[in-house]
Image 1 (spheres, protein in one colour):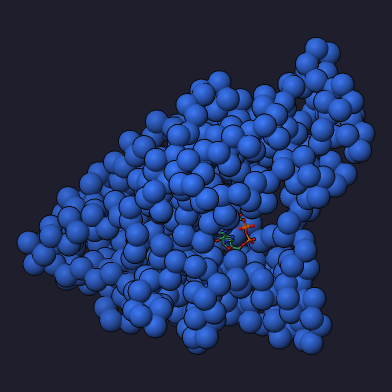
Image 2 (cartoon, rainbow, N blue to C red):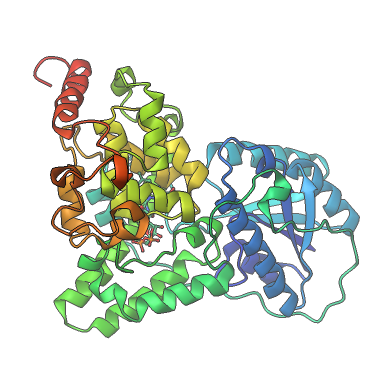
Length: 470
Ligand SMILES: Cc1cc2nc3c(=O)[nH]c(=O)nc-3n(C[C@H](O)[C@H](O)[C@H](O)COP(=O)(O)OP(=O)(O)OC[C@H]3O[C@@H](n4cnc5c(N)ncnc54)[C@H](O)[C@@H]3O)c2cc1C
């Protein structure tokens, strides 16, 4: 008998450890542990927790239809797993690899506890196609620049999806199972945001819809927040409600469907490149875990960031007076989602207009994002701040007005999230102050900083740590 310990792999299809358990053991018992860290972890966000809990419910239903009861236990994995394995007489626990340093520390404790009890523990690669030591430069070092990494990634054959867990008619021993809370408030995190459709069914529908059309226009469509031009699969990748190999196999079919049409092929190619960004940042986190605590380039730890809390709070609340920034932050606060273009705009605004550390923004995003993921979030923040591996150079500073004009040209996205500006003309919606629209009856704030002035201050701040001529 093998216990399959579900973590961020909440699906029955294309699941490495689960299919391996089904292949090697006569009896597979699925288990999920409601870890204490779900209550107390510093970065737990209510939307993400709700997404996780509901996806566990969906998984329990999927498993139930196949004849497998999902056992839920609450507490510390290193105590609960050996206890459950002993109750059932299981020989081993299987699970899929997690890459966050704190998860790996927990897994080491689980290994020790199981080992002491004479129970096996096997961990499999699942969430990524290639792990941190599998794609290296010719000199045997990890890549720190994306383009050559991506080229090396694309040069390798992609493995096919793993077999889906087969149904069973076996009678399972009845053991205690804890109730599954569906409201994150029960774990101390009241939900104030909406939550997208969960589970493998939610992921499958998003993938079907995306591959039926938007993928072919992705090269352009992915940059416009008011359009539905991206897959929205990120919370599903994070919880593992869909397997990466499944997505890649389906993308290959779409690529064939695109035929020789260069625009449609380009859409498929760029989508693949985005999926590789996810693995790139994952390997950065694994190979350079210091990024969790500071800049990838340590000289930037000396940057003299502002600690202006009023500015930070205005940014969090979507009250900066820059409409595209405010619309993006209000969307995040209400839905837990934010389009990639807007993540770059808001992150650059915090770091390069308000001159506030990327670490404050990284933490806020982790509290709010439904897809919050340590590797991708840290990578995105350090890229935007100019402190990371393959960062935008520090002197590349987005202008929030021209970004708005370019990527929300008629202002539909701003109108959706900033009702104070709903009646404002498209021509001035991204700089309403030019038409005298702010404060008073209009209720919309004046810009809290002047972009031109802050840009110069930002350049000076970076130059101060880079030295003369830097
Ligand atoms: C400041 C900042 C913070 C970010 N924080 C996160 C985060 O916490 N979690 C997260 O999953 N992504 C994060 N991203 C990356 C990106 O914004 C999201 O992955 C994307 O917006 C999710 O929408 P989608 O699923 O529709 O993406 P699509 O455009 O459909 O892309 C498909 C998938 O590729 C991956 N992907 C795409 N772009 C990136 C990228 N730049 N880096 C890493 N993976 C990528 C995601 O898994 C995504 O689901 C961040 C980016 C920035 C600039």
